[in-house]
Image 1 (cartoon, rainbow, N blue to C red):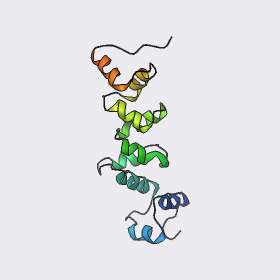
Image 2: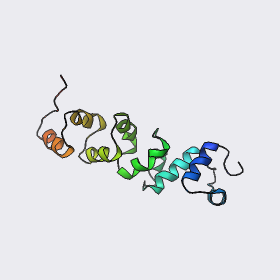
Image 3: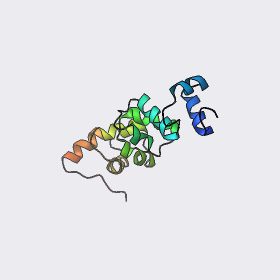
Image 4: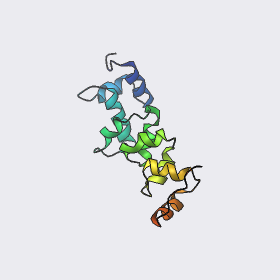
Length: 131
């Protein structure tokens, strides 16, 4: 309580390896808010300082945030990838070929791998529509 007012934030800090003393010593000027903790997680997972706040603002569950950051997808698309039931690595594989979450989902339903879908897309082929 003396370091963090919100028990959820305190639990998140403990999961990140903080104890009372380290949390107190590293407490940011604005305090340990949920956003600050999520930003810290994003930075620790490799997000640049320029997108850490965007990652912290996503609706991704706390326990999945680091995996999504590490996958290298755009924070603005991460919620949609998750909504379409893509795992971080799969979303990254589609994203690297320039697919949006919705376009990837259309191709993914057909069972085509991302690299094959990219070649087909580049040749002007559209994914088959479900019957």
